[in-house]
Length: 391
Image (cartoon, rainbow, N blue to C red; front, side):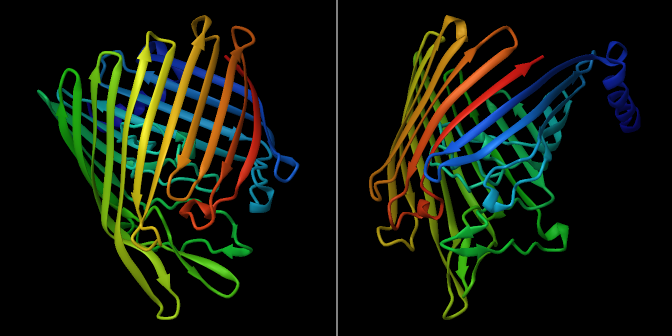
């Protein structure tokens, strides 16, 4: 099949699914709110809409996945000037299937890690760190346009990924009363490219992967001026591994990362950047009981060579419990820092009010100790709610 014929068939499949393949859609309309108890007002109160489209060819040669989310009056952090409506494509992926490999193209979220919460192996996507948590959420990942080629041969598996434009994290507009300058982006697109590979072995009850990735530093070096903060980004190399081993109801997990030359701090007096080795390791175990209970425990160790204590250790736990076939579910997570006594708790209850109507209510509290690398984000105590109609 030629590329022109494939493109035409994909376009027509959206409007003539019976002729070119099977089309499934999922649409959602809802209202979400977030009350900030620290400042005593709503930081979010907005209607939203989302849609997901999946097209599968009858011959099994290709598939197309589109996920779009639109917000009306996006009022997250009004002080950060995000008070306008916007539309975001979380993914728009064209998958081409061949005998032993797969090619994917488009905006996507790439998960390389195995552990719960913040996975250091997930390097491909930058994150929105205005409300960062050591437990992390996939919703904080920023989609990136990429070419992804993967394949397998017996127990061997691997993939290569190429992103033509670098991914920058989203920072708060202000830190410590100083405005944060937008990053200066290189004009030459080929100098912004990020790329890397992952390769490993897949067994019946285990998998182990190693990876290498060239990218902009995801933790910005900060240059403090008289009235503003300037984040510094440079291309660096990172290496790591991810692994999981299943023992019936128990699963052992591991994610590790090392960046040998990571820009960590700008010495403003000398106008030079200090470099050091950054590393992150997460070890976890989770227990699954039938299909309704899951409990995960993780140990985290991050090393920042410029910090006084040189490292940041922490423990986290996640619990998922479902009742009545998933009509009612509880999700809870806790993080405790050991070196800096950072704290975070989060709990969410989801329930079905009908066949198409869902209600979610939750709360979170974050407290970062003085001197902690997490202290660049604000301490918060939020209460959230969302009601959504799916059809």
